Image 1 (cartoon, rainbow, N blue to C red):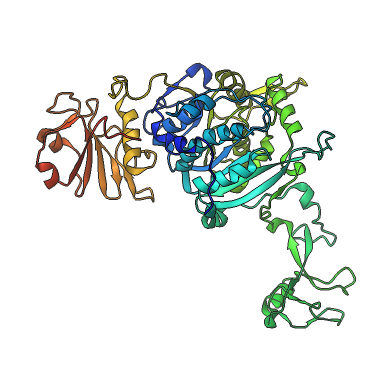
Image 2: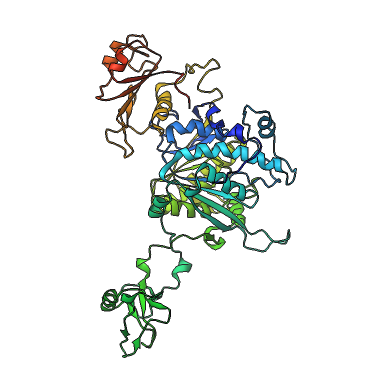
Length: 552
């Protein structure tokens, strides 16, 4: 398969492994109606979350809790037009990357190095984002012509060409633009799925709107409600679909040349007996099938997304200004209707949605609106790098739409309800400068990292039942974190056995081993040291020393 190459690629291909692990620190005054224990504790992944901090570091810190649990990722990354500024400070061990990614991209025009910088920024973030998706999950990315060709190649390399689903065209403007050689009226929404076949089988149809429903009438007062007639012919020749149809007035109908009937004769006779064949007002028309509005489940999504159905940028600007009573500095804001369309197609009522370029927080707003529309329990994780935007735009917007607000016209807008927790990334990494675990890190926080290192997924809520992926969770705050692929995963840390001494704490001794919840099978035990000696192998134990074994 052809691959994309650029200056600095070698330095970023594995850069995600060098990103330091950081914890999430709650900020109660910026949260709304938050409940439960603080982020970083196992089993608290049931609500909405806003994280302020560099999104590469935030994704690395979120992985141990949410890996393999996200149904839908939507991101609206910098378009790299040369007219906007963006900063992503990735301290990669490479002179050219340090020079490029540590600077603000300015108005330097269409130069190759600008695209190199953008690719270096995007690559490690996409590598991490991929690890969040469920088997039936999908990622949706907004982009314009500035980088769409590079993005397609990048996604083919990171996700695999076989995971491509569609490149949707969104009509972002509703009026003609007089600038440029040809007016710019559209953007793209690129879609890749972890399992395209599963995605096709589980994706939802697009709900029918009133404009589309207007074609359904009820001229004959049919007790089944509004209906329309649907063509009963299909292209091609199939012998069992080439029968004669006799109309009530005696007229004989044959399939038109080059076509056949869309059903076999027995199916036609069933529909006729149910009064679902229509021969026109005078009974002389070609037979058509009656379809009722009440039976319409929606439409199969297609790649043309007109502004009438999903909104436009002008609508998005007015939407934000109405909520925040100010104009934000976003050149290409997205309307909530656009994100809702993605949610309608790609999620179920209990899905987790991730956006690591949160900006004005439109996906969070769309999640709350969708919950109100379908009584669902969609949840969001939003990551925003800029502290001012995270506090005063992302979080403030969501606070207002949750609780209700007065818009720019003085109208009272009822709140959508919901809650979210606001967090910052810890200033200090999980490990100290000499490679030791920070002394303030709790057991539940470290347990998430240990579980992710072994299972590659987020730590599941406590449950005695299998989760369907070969994993079973044990009770919370137990040295037995759970069972994955028949291996019991243990963590001895911070006195989980109520004793920090070697005899009953963080060191694997005979006494400590006897106190562990039993498992009849292979075991992986993380601890500060191992004093079992040769017994380790006899007991089927793989010992891993912390912190050195936590190489994520």
